[in-house]
Amino acid sequence: MPIPFLSGLKSSVRTALSVLLVSAASAGCGGGGSGQTGSDPGGLPTDFIRQTLDTRRFPDAVCNDGSPGIFYIQRGQGAAAAADANKTVIHLQGGGFCLSDAECSTRAADQVSSTVYGGRIAPEGLLSGGTENARFRGWNRVSVPYCSSDFFSGDIGPTGGSTNFRFRGAKILAAVVQTLNSQYDIGKAGDTVVLSGSSAGAVGAFINANRVRALLPGASVLTLIDAGVYPDIAPPFPQSSPPNAVRESGAIALGYWNGQVDADCAAANAADPGLCYLFEHAQSTLKTPFFVAQNAKDGVGVANVGLLDSDVRPDDPTLVAWINDDYLPAIGTVLSGLGSSAGQGVFATCDSPAVHTLSTSTALWERSISGFGGRSLETTFADWVAAGAPAVRLLASRCSYP
Image (cartoon, rainbow, N blue to C red; front, side, top):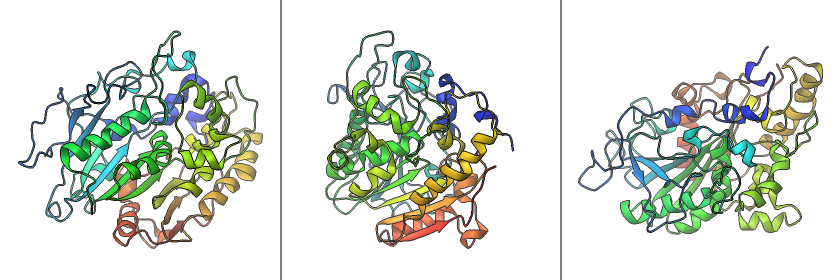
């Protein structure tokens, strides 16, 4: 089965791979500015509108180009909004990463700057305010655009060189959480807050989960990790310099971005803290309950393990053998080890390699899966949250490539 986006891959296509389907979460529907038009008397916007972080209060919460970080927010919709008023989803968008001036210079405008974002969005899936998203439309929903190219983990000022980028993803997320708390009273004692992320945003979610929990000590903080699991295995073909495989990029990220991985994870992996960008090394130090949604055969995941600079064809026998003999067993080991104890949940499918994230598309978010008893990701995750994060394991029974 041909997979067009895995054919003839170069580093310049990292963005296209990692942003697949995630664009649905950032698609705007017109408008501009960052005011609070469409707000209810309590101050929460009734429309899903843009808010700009106050750089007087948070001077380092900026995108790669120095423009201020932003977020979009909408209060709960429908009959359940009153009952769900103390529940909030904070979703981190995805979109790849870059590790050198040369790579960073090829990033799209909406991946390095907030200046190109519109005033309103109409996201799908978990963040949708539509009636189809019955279990979450009543929640307050926040979407954080990804304009820092650093898995929401960087903390360094202008780097000099050709791009002179800032990498301040960790500061952007911290500023969003503090603004939500001080301006909208989100995350107060007794509140439920889900920190979710898709693709690169999923990595940002598990890297920042403990810090968000510390910022909101009275709230119940849970983490949803969608398409953020990349197994720690060697790629089948030689790598470029710098390498593109996530497993080999962590050490570079710690320097180039001043990457701020979780402190407990760094201590547990003192010989190589860059491993904390891989979920299997980070999960043991997570202090929040977490739920993983993953297509085991995700083509972006395969590429991120080390095919981004390869000219290999998708039907190359070496590639096919590596995916079936190494990649799928490795990711299967990670996923099958989840959901056996309280505080953990996993919803792992074996979809087409073209399926990347599962929570940002309404069709995939609402889809009933016969092998999972007809359950959808929406109902499974909602029930998990409502029940206090019990052990939940829904795994595809078999998976092979192509």
